Image (cartoon, rainbow, N blue to C red; front, side, top):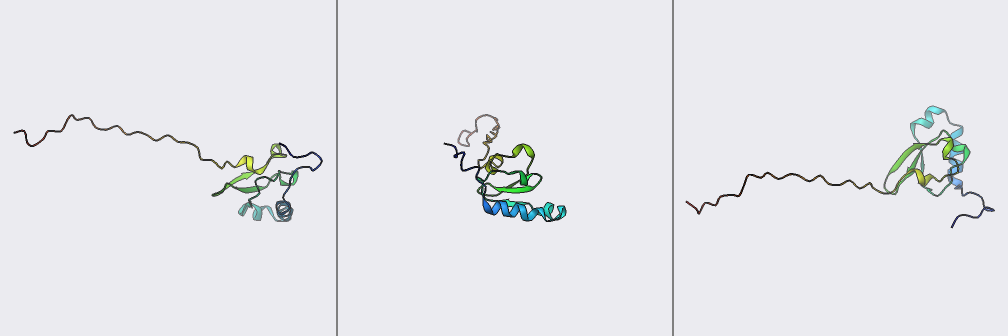
Length: 105
């Protein structure tokens, strides 16, 4: 079920304040350390465009740059929490034939 239209999009207040605080920083300071975001359910709003943010995946952070086409989506959509399945590589055993026992002289 989606969120009610009359409520509007969910924007975490702490994320909103942090983005506004970063707007007053120089671009060099912003590039050094991206903003860490734990609120994956927060909607990306227009003030975030151009920012580098690190989104928490439950174990570590994934860094992305916010672009215009991301507005209206949620932060969690851009940082997957699942591992990709990688099939194991099977090793080929050497086939030299059956081993000879020492009892047969």
